[in-house]
Length: 212
Image (cartoon, rainbow, N blue to C red; front, side, top):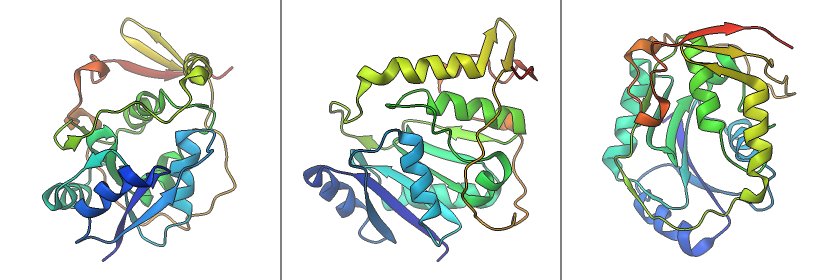
């Protein structure tokens, strides 16, 4: 067994529901209290794990055993990220992080991390499967969205969006995390991605780099 499910939570009454759904699987609970960003939280889940496959589960997600198995199968087929409720329940191999870098911790307060990562997968030509196919409890977010403008501003500093082109303007930050050597995962191409409509026509958009 070379995977674990990490339930990120600081609300025990919600976390218990996710734990019940995952009782047949290798899981742990990661306390997300007072984290400055979702990206930093996910990065700490990655670096604290001894496993090669990480499945991140929001406390509001209610995945079935079949959903966990689907993620594992698709990752072994070469998908970069398999997200069965956006970034509320998603999995990836550490090799993805070794290839394109960690989640960008400059997105303070929550928001835009998923859009940013989709652009990075497009740049690297790595396939992304995204859906909303598991049960998810709709409750107010625990993130401080008063800070959302910080994330939004960071996104548009990093990426310039035009009609048929997205230009990278900021490089990824270099974090002092060590995952060891690349394990030679062969990834599916981005053109095979299955994406939710809010990504628009990203498959056809041209990517380029003009660093500030």
